[in-house]
Image (cartoon, rainbow, N blue to C red):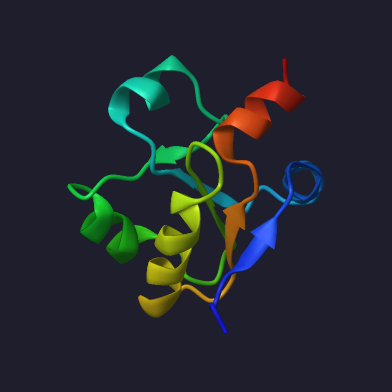
Length: 102
C-alpha cells in the first residue's frame, strides 16, 4: 500500500468547508507558487522540509499539491514514511484546482 490517499478537487473543497485543520503543502517551484496557489498553502521545498516535518501537526490531514498530481504522489508517500498518517495527493494538481476556480 502506498500510505497516502488520492483526493479530488471536489473532495478537497468539501474537506475545506468542513474543517480548518487541513494542511496544504505545494511542492511546485517558487515562481509557480508565487504566481498562484491554494489559499493557506505552505510552499514546501527541500530547504524547509525538515522544519515543516518538525513543526507540522502529524494528526491533521496533509494535502500535497504539485502541477498535475504526479509528483505529489511521491511527496505524499515520503511524508507518510516520516510519520504523517492522514496524507493525500491532490489529483490533477494545481492546474485542476485553478481550472475549477477560474
